[in-house]
Image (tube, rainbow, N blue to C red; front, side, top):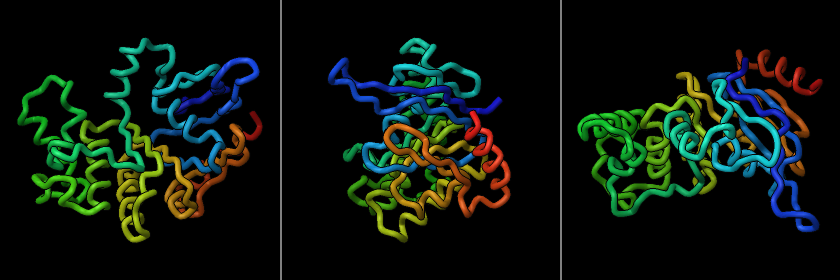
Length: 246
């Protein structure tokens, strides 16, 4: 069984004459430890799909499961707990709290977890070290560069070691050099076993993924393996072939 499974996902906004179908019956599987990019023009449904995959937006129809858990069969409280344990989020806007240090920003996802303060600080230090920001843990967001702010956002997303990282245009506000650095960082997390799902407009960013899902008008129009997938290519081709027949 695949680690992430989407079956006939649909999402409708509005009713009757005002109804808009943002997602129109999407099905796919993602393996544990796979890096998948989702691409499409504005209005293609990729942001809606990502919000469903992030357990943030209930589909109108269909089933979505992670690690065998039917996400939208959970209560709101259970789903919130699942997000905390399983999912890390990175967005185009960094959403750092300006009056908190980098260390304190990274600790935010740990605030509702019952553990000693020292343990939380140790986890935040480890996450900052993982993204190459040790030595800057006491600086405010305004005192570091945009690329470093994004690294803080990545550290915050992975501080509690979630198995899945959800990234929405994580390099949209960065220059090309910093973009490459952040993408290498995200790919490194995947190489260590994290499952990564990323929405991006950039083909250069998408090439870091093993597989690219192309959306148009709420539908999957193409699913192909990235040219840089390496040893993952054969697996991605088999998946694409099987899904194209479903």
